[in-house]
Length: 298
Image (cartoon, rainbow, N blue to C red; front, side):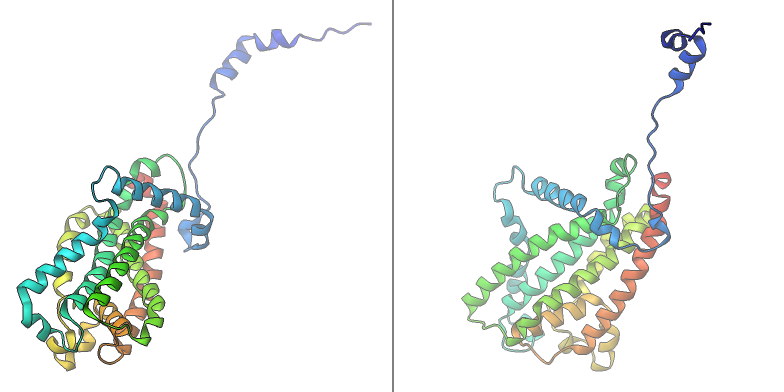
């Protein structure tokens, strides 16, 4: 008794099989692990290689085919320092009480301001500017607003090196409080990150925010103690309200840490830290909510 087994080739050549094969094409599905429902900050560590790649990419693009290279990191604050010194002159020293030379104090404040303002301005557009990447593959989107912050942290380090040279030229001896400088740097990063998360999420949903950010940053500069000391300008009874501006607490704190200038601004630093922490967690939550539908929004 024999049985007939159909050949594989005959099955594959049948119309039914050909139709099945024709429609069996691979499909790419972009999905996440549900991080949009929670903060899931641990996901940042999992995608640290993406952050590293994007930081290196931005650094190479920024200084590619430039004449002075990394010197661009210090030319702008150095130029602004010279302008403020020439314009305000002796009046500038009066606006900043203490024995610290005005140019050195202004350069430190400008270094902090440059880090915060440039990081926020570029981070606010990070989702929109990377729309082509977001639509192709899933990764932790928190990497996008963090990239300009890390890039500008490199520039900030270069500026601090120039600050040390200026202090040597003007004969300024750093205070023992400088040991607390790393803590101030952490608070500075926290302030910048919290605001950047909020603005990047809002910019993705409301494009009007993209037009408002430059105006906010410009007005924010004059509301921050970059070229003056708030103790000498703001009435004492209103200082607590003024220090709701996180940059004000940061600059005052750095001046005290680096120069030992004035009394310790503990109240300003406490207000800055608490408000920035609340903004960080709320901004991360809002960003995660927007992230769930960001592909459809863009």
